[in-house]
Length: 141
Image (cartoon, rainbow, N blue to C red; front, side, top):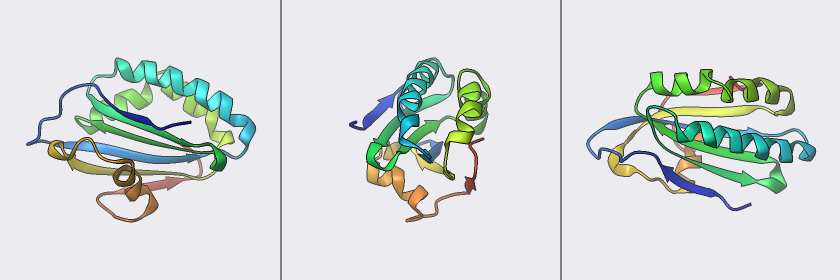
């Protein structure tokens, strides 16, 4: 599956700092991939109407059962509101038992740097740079 390239929801102000979130979401079993992809479509519909979203991208490494997400938000409150709303909230709850250890990185990104390349989006999660606070968990929040 090719990567879903950067989908911009609103123009980024080059003089502003935004909140970026990068994640690595590995599944335990290959048989969970079709359901995960189906859930991705529902979350993409939610993203299309999310307040405060600047843009997002998704990459799938199907052979590794691993998905990468990257999103940029105006602020923490916008990201929190999206994460707490359905269908995202319900999907995350349902996916927890199907996931290996997930990793999330949160950091500031200047609007002038957007969009990033996939190499740049994945680097914080891979530990190649430490631009902000990070969180690893055995289950997704």
